[in-house]
Image 1 (cartoon, helix red, strand yellow):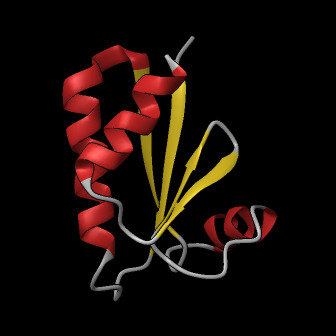
Image 2 (cartoon, one colour):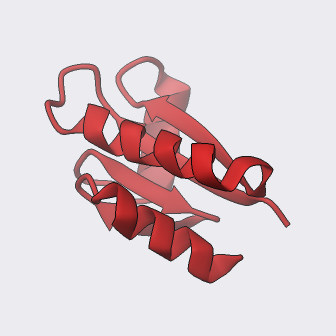
Length: 87
C-alpha cells in the first residue's frame, strides 16, 4: 500500500518550502512506500478546487491519504514519524 502525501502551498507563502522539503525528505527515506505531490493552489482552478474539497483554509497544509494531517510546516521528523506509523 502506497501512502499518498499531498502538500498544498502557494507561490508566495514563506513557510511552504519547508513543508515541501519535509515531504521530500520523507520520500527520500521511505522511497516507494509513499507518493508525494506538491499542489500550488494559486496555479490553477483545479488545484484551488482540490483545496476547497479538503476545506483547506491555510497553507501549507499536508494531506495524508485524503485526511488533513498538518496545517503549517511540520518538522521533517514529525512528518516521518506520522508516515512510519501508517506503514
